[in-house]
Image (cartoon, rainbow, N blue to C red; front, side, top):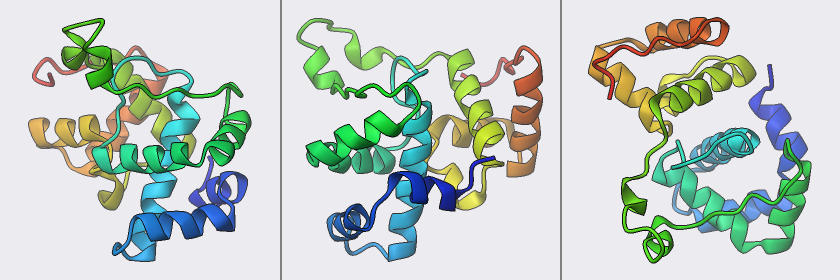
Length: 169
């Protein structure tokens, strides 16, 4: 498993930490760190994702701030799995070509695969991080599951074809 500390050591230099603390002020540094870590987890998996992004606006905002530092973002992308520049396109921009762009959502199976990959690579979801992964939060709310039940289900989803409960949509 990849720890939060390992993610920060590999991908986050002190200058970017300082930059994020300034951009995300007045959030406490601990919360800034959590958001950076969750953004890094997503970006580590993004090469294999398609469709709508599976993270919250707060994590998307961290991604936007990183992109603004173009040289540092390009360097980050080169270190990530896949080693390619990860583009970000607003669904508002995509509306010009595709009027249904805002309705495109990540498929349920792909969303479960992303969440299962999270658990496999970074360990179980915790209460303070669940809110940054909307589909995971949706599953727990819709099915009345605890975070432990969610993590157990995602762990089993890794090793077998994930059977998604019908009431989760």
